[in-house]
Length: 445
Image: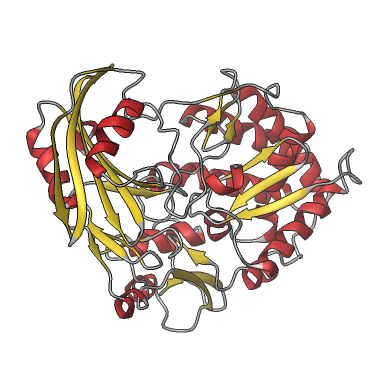
């Protein structure tokens, strides 16, 4: 379930073997050198890494895009391996459903855009909570992982200074990353800015006690060679954000995103967050039956409102959206922030039923209308057009005379923030210029 809820396994055997080789080099310097470590690359743009009990270590392709050399990757793996070695996990058998931040309860029949997923998360003690099934460790646990991780890193032959520089770069980019398409939150080294800063400080302190003179070893070239062609940002299997529109090339549908809303694509949902807590959520269900209105009234609305104060479903009507059968209704409810209204819309298209939840404050009629207008743009994407949508990918380029940051930014496909992407991906602080012979990562389409 952890893998499925975090994008599945990234389908690139060469990258998987490379990450495993780095991980096993570190494992040989631990007290569990001969035990079954498993290293997995997840197919999600979120910049993250986490551990699970039993020596299971996960990194995302979003993190691999951000990393610049093998030593940086090793520093992240070592940190997560310590969480496993120290057993920084809750007792087994503690499970419960977690309410999403919309205030509505999770729907037990949710199965995701690509099928098969049932909703549910771990219920964990306050010191170890989860995000998408990923543990969020306490501040003290991350400090322990920082200190021991540096020891494992340096004993495996990697320079500790690399872990300090990389941790500081992650910390510097953390706020920026939340607002950049394809990067997501950098869920590393703690949950809050203060916790992250404490972890980075612990790494820096631990490195001072290490003496490792391996400055002449090239950790950059093999790493960048390994990640050439890595998918960057969204993928066709989960849907793409292009020019203010969500497009799913494989399922062949699209809809316009409300202006000013920030989209997030997970394994089972598309969530667009807007002003004043407004939220537009898309998922699918296989439980709708023949009559869409009956499904909203008898199944979906009751399952969503079972844990909140709610009023009567109103304006439940059949209609048509994008040439497909549809139905919609409005469900009022109260949560901690006050009265809310969720417009519930179901659309039957190509043997699938898609569900939209448009959630806003009860008094915020304009935002409600804006989301309703976005839902009404749902339409089928022709086969020939769907085939033209490709993911972004990482190209590794050696700097030539005449190259510049402006030139690279112009070549990248992002409408906004291309230079910021380039600088973040390559660790170029503001004002730094490319030097002939350096290797840099470019995002291409």
